[in-house]
Length: 151
Image 1 (cartoon, one colour):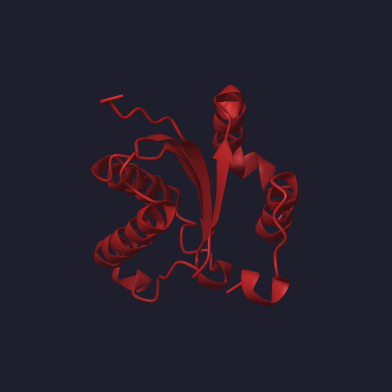
Image 2 (tube, rainbow, N blue to C red):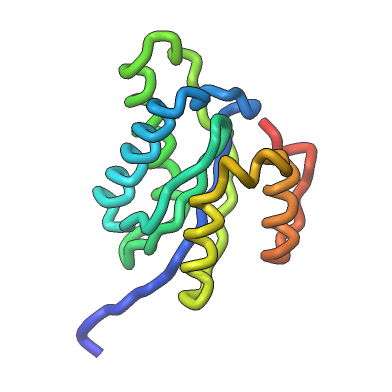
């Protein structure tokens, strides 16, 4: 076959360092989400939806056929961290956590996941980020080491 065709949906989840509520301001949070969408586009991994709350983000994207997940995450964190520090001097201490979650998503589950990401603010009135991340890892069959999960 002379043509390469790829459709890999990836759900990415990562937090601010120590879950600091750096994105409490809704306007800044929306700008951050838009900036992350732009980074995904520049990496040929279009975001279907990006959302989250004051201390973490969820992205659903189609992974580029020429990019690995670690490279995409590195670019997302590096570029958005640099950008947010120029937006507000009070955010000079902004950092993302070291780790992340990356989960493959079946095309048949894309719509449900988009709805889940859309409802993050409501969802997190009932569940902390840590509990959510533990639940996601259980759902996808990933065992986490709590000693290293929460930087």
